[in-house]
Amino acid sequence: MLTEFLSLPVLVQISLSGFLVGLLVGLTGVGAGAITTPLLISGFGVSPAVAVGTDLLFAGLTKIGGAWRHHKLGHVNWKILAYLSFGSIAAALATLAVIFIFQSNKNVLGTSIRSVLAVTLVVSAIAVPLIPILLTRRTKFRSRTIKIRPIATISMGLLIGAIVTLSSVGAGAIGVTVLTLLYPMLRARHIVGTDIVHAVPLTLISGFGHLSIGNVDYTLLAALLVGSIPGIMLGSRLTSKFPDWILRLILSAVLAFSAYLVLTKV
Image (cartoon, rainbow, N blue to C red; front, side):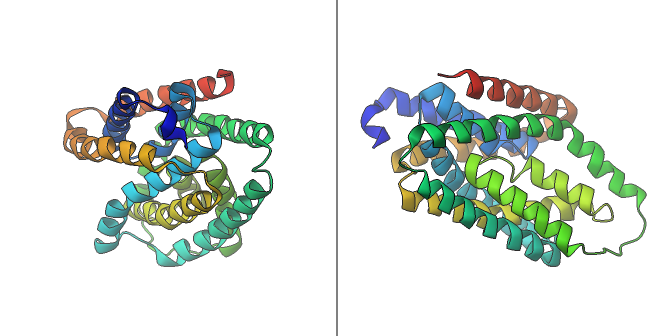
């Protein structure tokens, strides 16, 4: 197991990194998977497959509280969620099957994960600062009539499911962007709520799939959770203290730099 090669000081560093990731997530609302996976790969030398698998469970567990809160507040469009999940979960299962087939070929699997991760990070870096602008546009629409687009929603779900399962990135920033573009009549709170609730089963199913293949490290997962939970709580309290646009620009720069590290890390 990976943790056999990680000393206690390194695990403490991972927990501190988890705290910083949680702080950023609490401040901006996105970025957990997009930061944690490249950090584990480039910063701590974790294999791409284990980094993705561990981070998927990490992301799923940390989103449960937020998903329940949005459900209680009525911020979830369940029809859209059903179509999106139909596509994403099917794609996740298919992607897990492909990962299982290539599991023995570490070079091919690692290279594929790095490539998809880098591209997704760049897309996320572009999407993060655009999300507030796209969400602000919702106020221009007076009609509350939401025309459901099953085929388009399922298709986007397929894409998101494959990307998330292979890279652990995309359930947040890309999910919000997709919903915003597909449903311009949907209120901002419903876009965010639907996206967060959708991310929970997707990341957990993908994460447990990786777990069944052997791509999850329990000690690494625990170290991340120990640091991230207080980080998210603190970030949520501080979010009103900083201009949102500054935080998102910083996050965007971090994502772009993460993509660079993933591609150049030997």
